Amino acid sequence: MSAVVGGLRRAVSRVVPSVQASSALPTLVGQPTHESHPELLAPGELAPGIQASEFAARRASLAARMPLGSCALVPATAVAYMTGVIPYPYRQDADFLYLTGITQPGAVALITAGQGDMVLFVTDPDETRERWDGARCSAAAATDVFGAVAAYPMSELPRQLPRMLGSSSAVYYDAGRHASSELRALSTAELGVREGALRALRTLTHAARWRKSPGELALMARSSALAEAGLLRAMRQSGAPGVGEHHLAAGFERDCRWGGAARMAYPPVVASGADACTIHYSRNDKALAPGSALLFDGGCELHGYCSDVTRTWPVGGRFSPAQRDVYQVVHGVQQQLLEWCRPGATLRQLHEQSVRLLAEGVSDLGLLPGRSAGVIAQGAIRAFYPHSVGHWLGLDTHDVPGVAHDTPLQPGVTLTVEPGLYISDQERYGALAGIGVRIEDVVQINDSPGCSVLSRSVPTDADSIEEFIARGRGEGEPELP
Figure: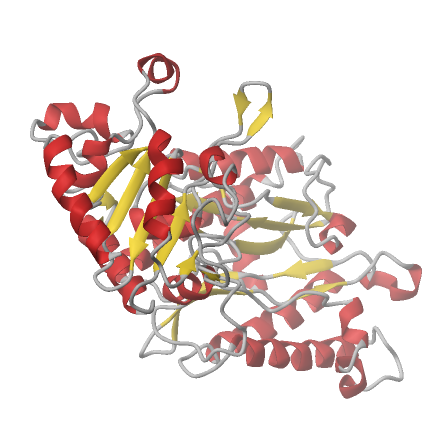
């Protein structure tokens, strides 16, 4: 494979002109650069705070974990269509984005073991298509901006790729991902992959993505700050006459996108009343009833990095006694869990602790009379707490599922901590019926202290929530970060 790449390096120097004039870069690259967006990107950055050299280092790290003579095949996500020629908003595959910094469709990367050399296949030049959709990454940009040692037009992929893969002892490729039509059209055999040589790429990329660099952590913090601002505004607006769930959902998205987010990280949950007991409620179509509690679970995606924050608060500004009782249980559990978020602990241990503590809370609330907390924790707790205490967070909302929950936490890892209690709207639960509470924060693991809460500016204790709502309704809107 190294001989093939060496030949490609020599060939590319003859056929791909060097990109010298900065004024030409925006038409060649197909996405923001320092030259086209100096207010967004510093020289050499492919994402805010992340240099092209960091992407190269990621490829080198991946290559170092692959056996010599192997390679990784990483496609961009294909464009998906709602209907006819109307596309869904494009979102890049997280592995491809992590390794290349390319945010646009129509590309395939081949990364070789050893030094991490990258060959890119990019969209063929098409003036007619570019008139409609704008410029895409050219072969020149592939080498000069994104660091490929060679670049080919996508039309060459069926001829060139089998030649490159045929000599590889192992090919790391997640077949079945949403790749380009050119790649999907070729079977594994047609790609030239030797029998038995295919390996799962995610076993390598997920482990690498799990720990974040300083630049990534800064983007995670900024993404969380946008979600915080949206939630703070929603808290203040929820008691206004005529406000419904959809108003708060729309305002949250507006705040996040105004601050630079590309999209929501997932459909927001704006659930008032008993609908807060539906974990992924997303209709968001009811008017807010005075006296009800509201569960708002929202996050955004900023330059690829996701936030995921949940708060529960009283629509009228004051918790009822029953709402406060349930809320205090969940809040107390979350505060204890945050103290245990430190290097060496595991997400599985955090979940087991959450089950034990919430079972004690269910027992104290009298929801299952005659049953001890220990008995409740053995199974009955799932009726009130059916989900995990959290998940990894990063380039995907449920980031790197390939990393097991019993992996010891390390500095640079980001995760959510989100205990909850959901009491179904049944008469037997009395005043507690129909109350759903979840409190979720974005947590960064540190060397010392054990963790930082990236979403800490939105209050979580009941008294502070009531004070914020009461004070905020006389002070106007919170400022966006």
